[in-house]
Length: 139
Image 1: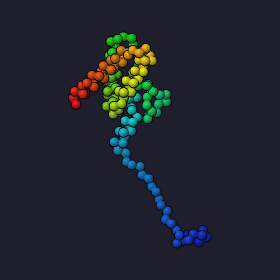
Image 2: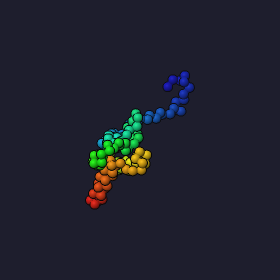
Image 3: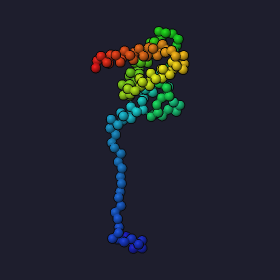
Image 4: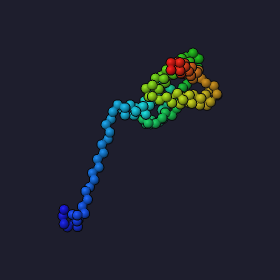
């Protein structure tokens, strides 16, 4: 050391060097991130995303559906939506999805349908009920 700096060689301390190494990415980490982004949920045709949606944001509304006014067509549409929702639950591993959808179905019934469920909602709930009943029997 230079003597002009006023450092005493007996009082020198060693400097600690810190290094950070990010953990290796593995498939479980990637899958967990994919699950948190709810990609399959956000791709559902009846889910309304927020403006300028970001990967970790929740959708604005989980039930954004306009009935056609044709009973049979609306029932079939609701059943098709239920099949897609079940597939999204499996892909995203998001069992809370059905609860969010039902909550928004009820909100839609109160606000837009004067307290009545639309035929699309009835078709959806019918198919979901069948799926729940089938799974309950298998277990």
